[in-house]
Image (cartoon, rainbow, N blue to C red; front, side, top):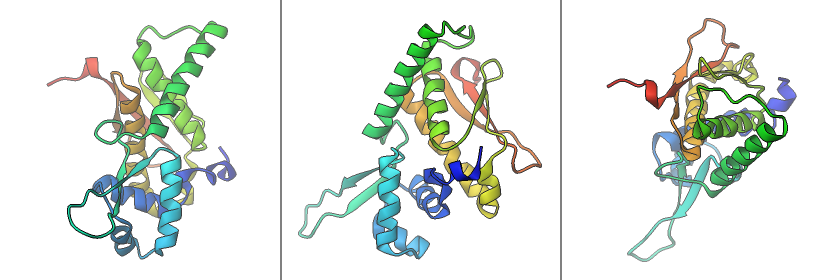
Length: 208
């Protein structure tokens, strides 16, 4: 994956990553709150929010007021559950349709370990990652997603912890919106920051 490709990703800008991180930590954020937390100009924040909304990562809603005054716009992360994005929903649906078509046309062998809903989750996950500039390698048996080498880790080495946290939450939102048994379990530890292997978890394998 080239750094030029990564540059087109919504998470290529650390300012957007920082804003998204704040919104993931606390939903229903206002532009004023984001400005105070980041010291960014309100117009810059609006531009970043517009990009995050257009990618289906966050949603905006007007505050319900019972008093006088203009209602504020509140921003929350699209988690595919409590807060859902119509854009994210469309992307997930389209990914499943393309995945089904590809499997029929190319007569691909469907992994026995993955049922239809899980396959559609993988379809959505792969398309999201490709849109972000990654070239994911999926291991259906081990339920891993290999994104090595991670150009983001190199370009934003000083912010790797926040970046990884934000990215894992984004991917979990995609899986939740797609609906199915798979969830993000975490990232495998590595001494090499360019190594990124995400571990997925199948609901059938969880234990109380």
